[in-house]
Image (tube, rainbow, N blue to C red):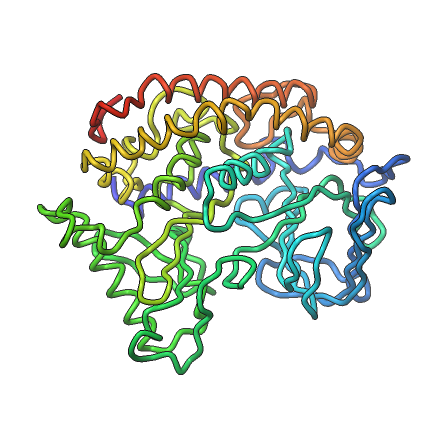
Length: 436
């Protein structure tokens, strides 16, 4: 099946399901005001109470954070611009937002920056999938994983629910720590980095998009705008990477893919996404990578797990067994599937799994319980504002009917997934991408 045709089918289905067929547009309680709040509070006010209706056009306003009294975090108040964020999530009733502060600020102990994301987690009724996936990225020692804090959000005086205040993926010394390129970086080693990219098949007209000969669509996030020489360089580099990866001698240690890709970063990125059976990670969207100066391509950071860990009712990804990134019938797996044609890469993945499984994966249930307990009051507030615990929200595979039921489903799904992957990953067994 062609990528473009598959994308059309997916997009059409998504728009139908999000247009009201699933009940998403009616289940809310706009007048609810929580009597008790035990999380930090974010206050957003737009100038003239202007509505936020666009993912591209910013609205000016003010931004404030009030920490909980018992913490050492400091309050913040400043001016901002705000717009919508996300793709399918922007179509849901509880909206995610992108905030650009007028000056860098450290919010709730996170590193100082201007750019922040407020994740709504409307379709993830555990409220925890992104948080848990970020934690796995940190446990695997990825170069950088977004930090986040759970908050209660008020917009123009109205309570909007539990949100996840999250660092945005940006080139910065405290985030993706690679050189930020100037328009004059057009020759020599300065032309080689840094580049921040996303594999993204959504064709956003406002982004810098280009495609390889095999149809892998990249979104160049930085530099933006890019000088013609910079765009040509990174396009050629990615095409060369793909050409070598699919060549007959791609495993050659001197001339193969190892001269272009950093395998350790790819393995860690792969394990997070395969563990969550992340539907979009088959080179469909939210697959981030970056190129440092005079260096290789690195995979990461991880991003976008709200329909991971069984929270999806299509492509078989509600089933905690079976490979997803390394072997599936869709036309999107691309580089990951090809890498598993290299026995050395497959063995390295298995070895890494065995190295971290007991200490980092088997302990995730306790981590989930700890975070769920911290949200005990906030989840009650959130689901009074958005009474959807017994309502299907696209693309839920489970409607548990209670918050604890949603948490239990997440834990059970991950426990089964870990057990299945462990049964398949033998460091002494070199598997190809079609192994089941």
